[in-house]
Length: 79
Image (tube, rainbow, N blue to C red; front, side):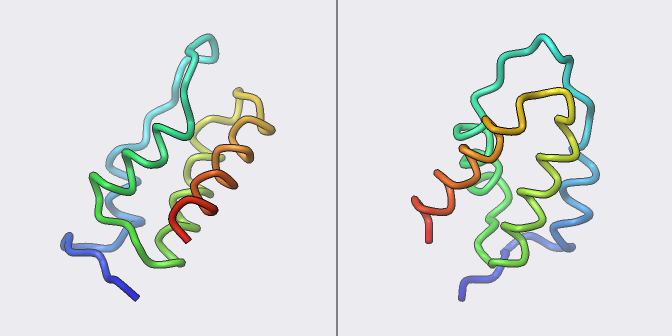
């Protein structure tokens, strides 16, 4: 298991970045999730699950099916 190289826990990192997206914004959630993983060195199962839940919470007005599809894609790609 690879651990995060950043100081602080993933909850703190994601909370600092949290901001509500505008509902009309078109977001590529696959790209967004992969970019967050790389930028924050997120590799543990716990940190990944936190990222996924944070994404669901951060974008409540977006299509849940698209978000879940992106999460499944990322899980199958990196696990």
